[in-house]
Image (cartoon, rainbow, N blue to C red; front, top):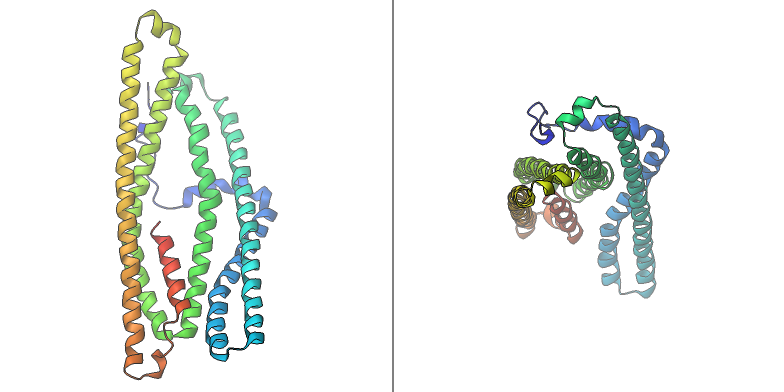
Length: 308
């Protein structure tokens, strides 16, 4: 039987252009998409306001030691936290709903297409593999169209906002961050592509095991009549082992990605701290407040997301 998972004609993904095929499934829910984007923007603005509120709280209240000033800044800080929490929850709900809805429509469309396929298709393709594509693969689409897309948008907006706020604090440090971003992100992209390839291979191996199980169980009377239980069990065991080996390779590369990402992120933070405080030690005014706690926190948060 031909194996869908080893189809050499399948193009290798090099961009996100194949995701455009999801647009017909997203168009009916444009209102939900706009609402999710609005919630995302509000949550991002509130999240970026939290370090500013904390900095104002430390800079003014600690120095003033005034109870009324403390209450005013605490109320502002709690208000920003409340706005962030509410809109973050709303964004999560809307994006998750959208992903579930798109995948449900996609599964229905794929099934309508499958039941209309030529009989030759079912002669050359394992039914179990088709079922795996209908379930497991569409679940991956759900993750991409839902939570992962939301994380990408949130991280991008937070990065842009953090760089703008850092530029308002110190233009020199913002320039350093702009130079460090490609240095940190570049190796992560290279290793991430390797992880993506291994993830696809792991998905193919899972489809192989599902197809083999479906093929055997659909003909279980024949298997038992010819006492082929041991042979089929061994075939399935080998397929599962191949799936395990591929999963371990993917996990190993992903662990390396995490190690490289964390190392590069904190190396960048260390470099920024050294450069940010060096002018202050020489008495220059532009470096006196260049690296505040909030600036370091924003930088660390943005690049830790890139390492996962």
